[in-house]
Image (tube, rainbow, N blue to C red; front, side, top):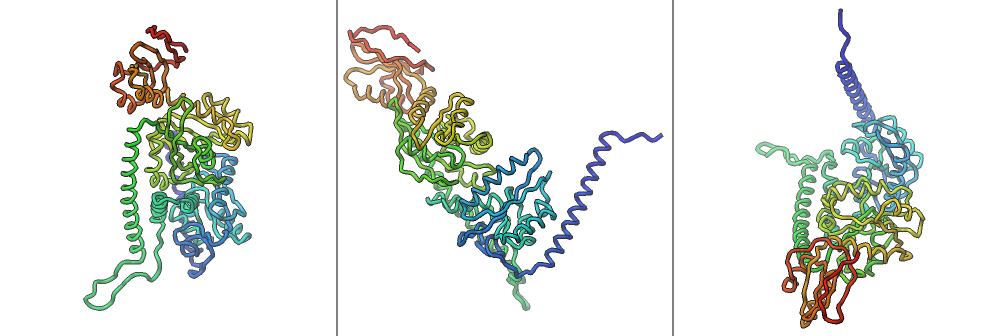
Length: 502
């Protein structure tokens, strides 16, 4: 008697059937694409967008006019329709920041992307109908497209097909102002364009006749070589900038100042917070990615210590890997900071997606283990900020507009930084008032006792300050973490035993 197939055999049979269906579907799609391409006019053009369809050759939005955009979002496995709509809402803001208008959106639920068109031929025809109805210039997909998918979509839709990565690159290109920022953005654009270069017809540099060397380079090969040459030059330039920045960072490490970096989601209010904390004259704009170039300013804390605060570029969901790679030299300031001020938009109902996006980028640049102080900004816009603070002990609610919570934030920064500094016992003779002033200026005094020959202190000091004050440190071994105490002096000149009070 023939035995029934095992569960594994059944599973393998199902897999083979699925693979067979996929091959059949791929073959049908290939035949359909060939049929569509045969009916297209090779000389057809459409305003806006990418390559053969007009606009800029770098594949970004044409800013000579306000393009009309159709957005496309796909709900994948593990996602909900609300997640897709929220992501499309953010993409619409990105498109608006890039200088175009969103007039329609198309949404699809799909288990996995179609290898030819990402959304399948039925949905492509629906997108084409929507594009024709509003005479759109460009179709923007919320997910990254492969070069083949982008090529097929543009041939079928007869208009530019871009993805979220291209839109973000376009915004960065608009907002970069420094030489370093421009070089970083250009390098990211070239890395994006390189696999998307397109061959052109009748560009083979062939030479006829007996004794000639045969066919020359195609235009595609020439373009690829030019891009690679430009990329190598930009990489060399950025390497020199990175070396200079590393030397500057080493010099800062020798200074008695701790380094704090402001990180967070784009448009969370990082630049506004830097201005309120330090009085820095920085660009403030209610738009995504308004700040790309880092800005460093000095801040004096309530305890008298001075620190350096740096504003960094904002993060976003699905941040292009090309940008993270290109901006690594800039983002390293977060990885080497003593403390990260993580600014969150406190007016949103659920900040978890933004927190996850920031955490992902911080991990990628090696800053995932740096201590963080969470700040829920925009408390003036919604009471949600205070609810978020209650749900995240140790965080602070602020408003860069009304100055609410700014003083509390300065105190919290000081407390977090002091907690990481070791405590030393220092004795300063009366004749060295300059050294006594340096201890108060560069550290936090937790115990102060007056003696006959001078002042005995216990103070939290940074390594650089401890090295400069080594002649006055009684024991070069840190005393460990001690609770803050009230400063006491003995007016009679006696030497009482210090008693610590919490």
